[in-house]
Image (cartoon, rainbow, N blue to C red):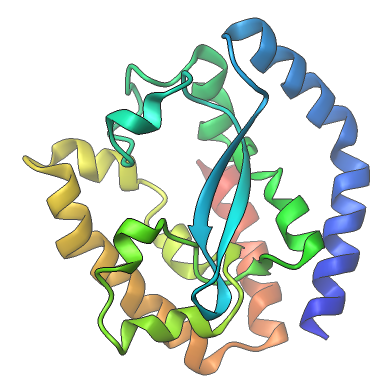
Length: 196
């Protein structure tokens, strides 16, 4: 039921949002040099790598200067990037990942291999389910960039504090998730974006 919902919802979403995708693509291309999409290898279900799609919100090569974005005014972020990140529009292309089966609409956010290699055997159970576009941890940590900006060592703070709490939340999701709980999280996500 969950997979069928993902296919239908992501397919309809891609069709309905195609005009917005076109506008954003033109804006991104006019705003800075580089591709429209940013593709990054993330770790998905059963510890398998996949290519995650996002609208590019940073200058080309920015990921080589660090994987963590710090604050709302990270100089690596483009002008269009500030807007699309604020309203989570950069995440919309992940509907492609959902449609082809790499991801689900709801599930633990996928990490890069660097951080997954730090998981304990128990924490590896977050990889028992498909990663998602949204999850409870994403809603609770929607101001994550601001938290990292205040840290003396953002990467260390992410690994030792933020990531550990996110994993705790996501392990609870893996243990009790259901179709109706997913629907509830989708509505919570929309509300969190609108409220922001």
